[in-house]
Amino acid sequence: MTRKRTDNNQRDIVEALRAIGASVQSLASVGSGCPDLLVGYHRNNILLEVKFEKGTWTEPELKWHMNWQGEVRAVRTVDEAIAIVTGKA
Image (cartoon, rainbow, N blue to C red; front, side, top):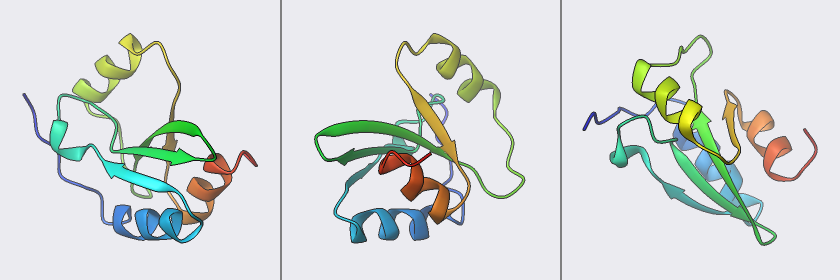
């Protein structure tokens, strides 16, 4: 199992999502390519992969995403995360 570090912008994104009323669970400790965040908002669940400005996908992340049958979105900014979670992206 590969554990991942969290990107520097993850804390700001989590705080902003919670400020709009979202439930946020960090999945970063799961590792093995699993997305960083599970977000619940208005009875919808959204998986978010947090990337820093020029962050790239790791091999485990690519493998996980290729095998996942549901939707996962990558975000780099607070505004992008809020737009995705609120359905405006």
